[in-house]
Image (tube, rainbow, N blue to C red):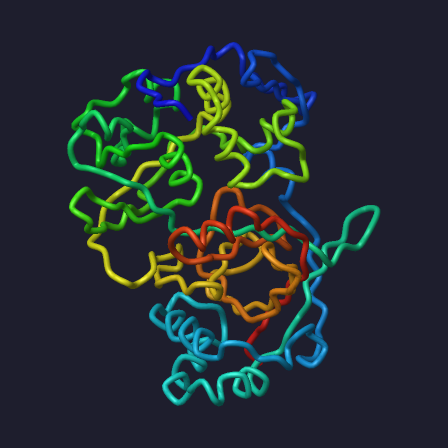
Length: 368
């Protein structure tokens, strides 16, 4: 994208929701307005309320790929991290007491002897569904500075009582003072990716790093830019991914980007923390483990719950079939069979997360 040095604004009349008709009008990058079914995060949450979730008891040898027992070291790590808090589901107090005796050689045997898997199945009026949507998130990289310069022009704001009352349009029209800026970045879209992922790693001009962590958000509805680009015919549905969206943004004019971003009035705020090799904390309050931690809808899956996932890999022809633990949540994670896989930090993790959007199966693994 060409340098965007002007404030991003959009006519409020171009975005409207008709809740009775369940349609929403988006402003396309070329200025057209299209109307489509509402699928913002708030509407998705309402749509997925009060689902009928059944738990079907199974044996571990019935789980696809269970006998492969991959990467016991990371499985042991995610269990140890889970036990750093006492806010865990029933039965985990005993598990955590016994966790000191676990090692990579016996962790799978321990699970088989002390847990039972239950496959999740959603019943609707017309069908029974044993598959749900799996996506992924990661700690993205963003180049930042404490000072505003010709290179670093795009604000990453701190959280405040005033900030959470403002829309994106109001914020980007100058609704917050520069004293409320946590960092300045060199790329507006990197800021947006940071908002979507919820946390990231800031790279400072001197080469050092700092954690940029979620601190809060405003009250506006989140609208997916990928959905807008799809509905406007800018990117074919089968090719929607973070890399394809970034490529579109890089080729867009400032006014085209303004129109696109203006559809999403949600805004996220951040705090900083000293950088170390430990992953960011999830909503459970424990460090996330790469490819072992999940963000879930806590209306249906309590934080701290062990799970098993079987879903296609987004980057090759293999499958992801392994144990995870629900240690995070997100505003866009709505539904009983719905999870967001934490992919880790950096560009490789971003490639995985940006292309992960597949249907898969989900099991709860509960203590006996």
